[in-house]
Image (cartoon, rainbow, N blue to C red; front, side, top):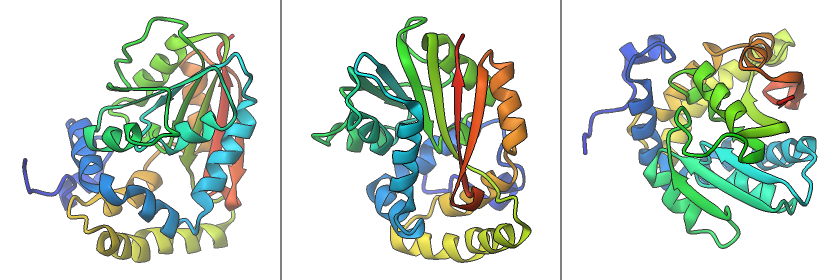
Length: 245
């Protein structure tokens, strides 16, 4: 395995434009998998769990629902959905190191599979909820990934996406961006032992990603309707819920 960092200074200038983004993202997540959840909890002040719980609430999970968690990572969002008692929860991710940890949890997804979000190995209309937490920003092609989520949903099914965003309040935005760009990358890299550049990629990938209005437009372009966006923690994260009609 290469010891070179997944994210170099050059690649970080335009992280969503690099042609080998998917490969870099896979290497990054395999590298940080062992301490991924610990770092998330520490540097969100424990808010990451509350964000996931709120997203599940907004999904309005029913006993007959079948949930697909795309880019499931270590399975924390899938586990949050599982606690809402749907019929089934399937997690998929293309980073093997993350998926190994998702599979090892007794309260994890009903099933896991190693798969690319841009080529989901499921038939059309297989699920009633397709979820993704902090993952769509990492897709090689956002439109393709959203259309795949649309494809595997049944009519009336919901896409539930939890993603970082930029606070609308200028003061909150300045404080958040200082923390995310200056303090967190160094401290998170030290805590995790990461050398992949993951925690330098995170703030760059957020500030250069779609804003809330653009993300809503992307969901509409993928075929979804009734798109809502709910800001959490001063807009640091946003929950998008969209329906396949």
